[in-house]
Amino acid sequence: MSSSPNTLFFRIETVHDVSSARRKGLMLAMDMGFQTADATKIAVVISELGRNIVSYAGKGTITVLSQAGDNSRKYIKIIADDRGPGIKNLNQVLDGGYTTSGGMGLGVSGSRKLMDEFNIRTGEGEGTTITALKWL
Amino acid sequence: MYFSGIQKLDNLLLVSVPRDLVDDEVIQLRRDVLQAIRQFKSQIVLLDFSQVDICDSFFGRFIYGTSQMTKLMGAKVIISGLQDAVIETMVELGMTLPDVDAVLDLDDALELTSRMFKRNGKLGGADADNEAMPDDDDKVLAK
Image (cartoon, rainbow over all chains, first blue to last red; front, side, top):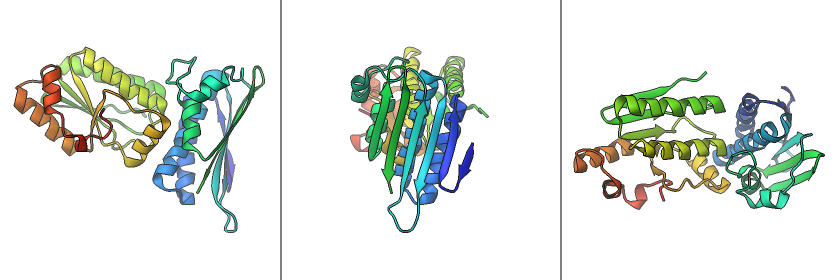
């Protein structure tokens, strides 16, 4: 992991990487002043998106950006990026309950509910980039 | 590092779930629980989550799966100690864990199980479960 004051960067290949990323994301959110429930949501979104990278793409990255300056509204942005197969049935995935990995199918749909802004860029064979933001 | 915090208390199995378990440790914990149920002939398994501050969908599946497997062994899972932030996150994520009974903390869990045994001598079937369950106000995620 490398980091600057406002950025945490994680290479994601195993569930251990996911565990480390979510723990550090939780600490960052708490340090920024997020309430515990919101910090927990940020950590869980990192976990869900990280798990998807491990399950579907094998490897990828998660970047956690924080805007914590005095003059602008604070936020945390999570960017989960992989070069895997992409999401084929995006609408079903967004509806929730759809899975091809044996999970609960809540990763993407649930993460969207936990965050304030949520964007997906994906295409078959083109990988997936999910950007999720939570305002303080 | 995985540490199996499983204790036998009479007919109960008290399982203190550590935080930050990774997937293979979660699966190992479940296997240890099932083995302990058989070894001690436990009738109730208290899964205490008071140390857990991040609960994602994999973890939710662990709770639900453990509850189902325990049922097939003739025992019952009660979960306790879920933190407010964890509960809010789980429910908003979509994990409502139907059929899994919960109490607020370990004290409530011990009181409940004590009542269950007092009424029934031993934990009986579904009727015994229902009679001994706490009022709705006492439940956290129970359906």
